[in-house]
Image 1 (cartoon, rainbow, N blue to C red):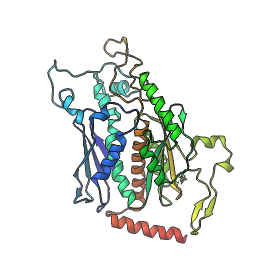
Image 2: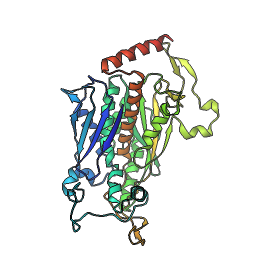
Image 3: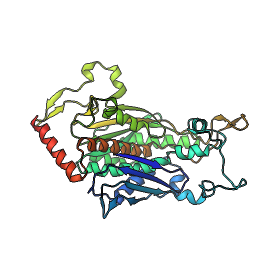
Image 4: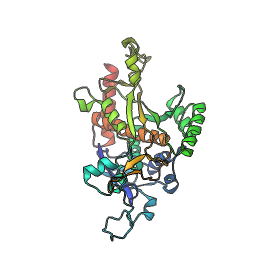
Length: 386
């Protein structure tokens, strides 16, 4: 499977075209909208989420509730477009029109690098596309992938481990319980005491004109053995998951399983012993590898974490240089969140869903859902008999 997105933060809409989804997959608009709503929530979100009421439109590739095998086109409208039609117009505008030109690049953003690369004297042409608003359409794409995974009893859920200096305590719960608890938490945290301290810290950062980052974790259960491959660098599933997480705006680190902690442990406390489970199937005694060995799934839960930096748009802005005058100025302020980590955990779920669904289609290739399921069942019988 593959997809492309298009659209700007204050343009008329965000669009995605998805290719390679098998035919006859039941696809619910309501389920996609549920994921879009999850992304909009979270303690620390800014005023943009009071304007946008994200709803998806499916304009191609689905008929009567099922995919046809043709490319799927998803559209999410930007409600704020009504206030930006002249500023973001694709048509030429008069010299005197308000373009809200941006000449002061914001530290931590794509503004300056993109302006230099694409030769843009108005950095709005960079920041509109590099904005994390783009993640709305990626959540919609991930929601399509999630519905494919559900057909194979694969479940994906995420939660927040850390915001700023507040670290949540480990909480051992089922994936179903994780979903229930995090949906009720304003910061999507399993540790209620840490969640309260996270919210207090976000409120303080907002009052100070500052922002906060954090750590999110995504877990996937029900995966078969052998998704991904060891034979080429770009087929390794752990590498593909790492790239997916790092592609999310403001993410600067990723780890799988115990991740960086492995550097401080001897090998006997890193690797997972192989056992037979109660059904006589191969399994692992522990899951320090996070469900991936040699670039392939082991059948254990996949565990991926990502580090999100604090949002670089600050209401007490850092210093920058005006590209016209070359004079130092306080960086320009675009409307922003004080903390988007809870929403980012939803985005992380979406990109993990897509990556796993892509690997599933790769392994059990079929033009229709029925063909995929037949290949899946045949392979599982082989694994059970091995």
